[in-house]
Image (tube, rainbow, N blue to C red; front, top):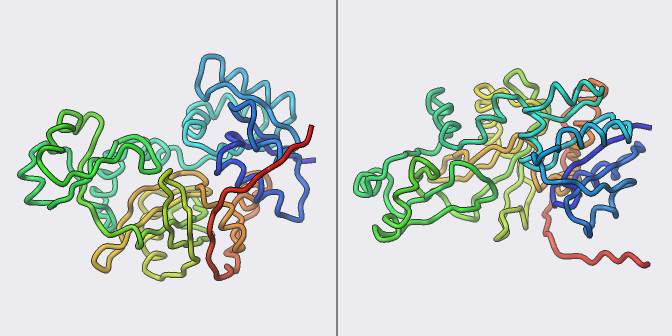
Length: 320
């Protein structure tokens, strides 16, 4: 039997991937790892392993031991820290014979610094990049970007650490961190015109399959509500960005609409938290990844069902 290991199995992304794999006609032995002693992960796995923190001392040796002990065929990292760690140690891990669902090496590194990422798009004349700056001159930014301004961490995701600036006083509080930790952007669009797109990149400048959702974010940064969308302009934007960045495998694109145009907020070179929602509408990129990375099967564009999704808290009871 094929053994699939999903890291971060207690996270929304992790158990979403596991649920999506279970939601297939194929049978896999699912291994999950999590840093939490008590979590939901055992509900979706055949084997659940307590993990050390990603990248901690001895993590690589522990990772290789798990692969060997459980005869892992494919590793699916579900969160950013493991994507980065496995990208940097890919050769050592693949010596075990296991394969890893990882994106384009350059793209993974680009996504670790939003300013470098912006420069790449800007230098490639990408029309979907949001104007950005490392200037700490409030008057210049006000004249060129207008208020409110966004101070966005160069590293991080899910909207964590973003500061909205409506006045000079707030700006001055964070001014010293601009350049080193923060970058500046204008605030574009609104919360009702935000879009999350999953495309399965071919690594050559295009994609095999795509699905779009108009979403509402929760306060924790994940998709809370979503509606299936099919928009030609977004498809064109994703294709153009793929030509520049050449993503491979599951890739998440986030857009906002502003004055009739779509702008790229960021890319996550991995599965996104909406993966289980996509599966429910017919786009199972977890299964696509297994078949592509293990069997070399090229994903085909699935027929997407139309509808809406709402996330809610549910109880899981384990009787002793």
